[in-house]
Image (tube, rainbow, N blue to C red; front, side, top):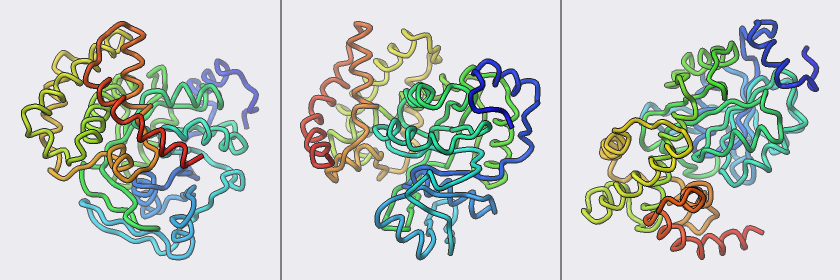
Length: 335
């Protein structure tokens, strides 16, 4: 085993030289078992992989007593028994961690993960923002962190029950410096064998920004209008808001050296038009139900970047300040 205190550079050299064996991933932890983690973890467990779910509350209790039920547009399935706990420190010998918590929980989750990070353990964040890799690297070490994203519309319908309502399930991930690695290939093999659409893009940060461009815009406009995607994309005024917000996000990405294609706005709009009419992003769902949301990591990030680079973000700014009072109430209630 490689000592945990190895420097990032030496660890990466070992990975590149093939001295660490990544022929098989034995144990997968899904940290956060809501709509995203519940679905992807469920598919992996259904395929016979050893999966440990980190969950909490009534959802955890239901999983421990009755397993996990998933209704999906890609096919329903039920797992009569799953391994689930609320204490990651009790888990040993984890190869890969799929981080599926809310963006505002990333730092807390990273600190909880510290005791189980072995020399070979790596973590793939499946978040809606673009800051998770740097947040995780600061706490766990860059050598243990990949970039990642997912696409799916799913949520907890009731404790122990996940409902996947739209968007073909998809995961993309890769090393932060975009180099090929055996551990990435091993994870890709596991995901594809489980029937999950997955790939290692040529540039993982570019891929993350392409998703961020889409999700931060539809989430914000959905949350402030409180109607499904199909309603606000078809109304001329809110469709113009969509296009303007996408343009602002593209300008910010390019200002940071993220070379989004020139047709990114058009492609994003075309993709939005393919989504089921009643699709509701998770940020919007949380706002409408009075829960803490990912407002800061999505819309707030765009507003702060705009201020930093002196790039106007009028749509995102209006949305952010319109939703901030309710978000503050939800966070105070949580405290």
